[in-house]
Image (cartoon, rainbow, N blue to C red; front, side, top):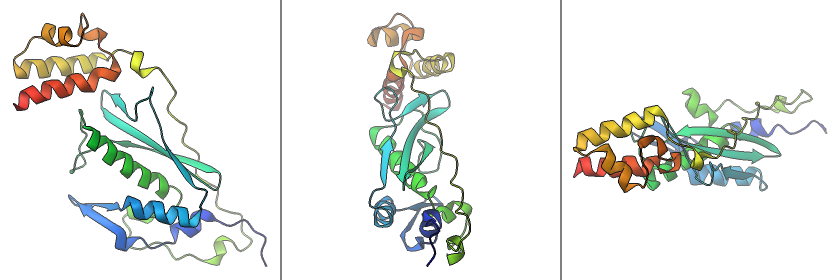
Length: 213
């Protein structure tokens, strides 16, 4: 009987998840309830965490909005950062709560995949590599991937928006035919430079609603 450590990555990686793949817009997605169920069946102690950015479950940047989920399996924590995308995998600059929740679910599945489950999907394969006892037959266990460091905890809510974000607000204000001064007055600031990062999405959504009206 071998006393070699169990290669948990190899066991998760060997599970065939093909029947639970959903396709939307030409892209393949693994059902998140199935991924969670398989993860907990393999490791009842597995846990996951939606990272917060000054209390918010997302991070708004010049290039888009991002979410991060960390999954711990057998004491190994791996995290995945995922942009908030639409059905065509294009960044959403002013996502709704539904968009953010959908991206968190996708991010969770990808974080689980880092531990092996369904990882082959993202490599463009139809089936997982055959699991062999060689993974645990006296050979050194596969070195786990380097744990992704969490984004430094900064006070995002207290920070003000960047010049690029200010320019985006100016562009939207021009498109809807309103003055920047009216925008700043509505949000209780003297200039765009004083708008907080935590309020950026509210400002953009407000302008986009007026543009769509």
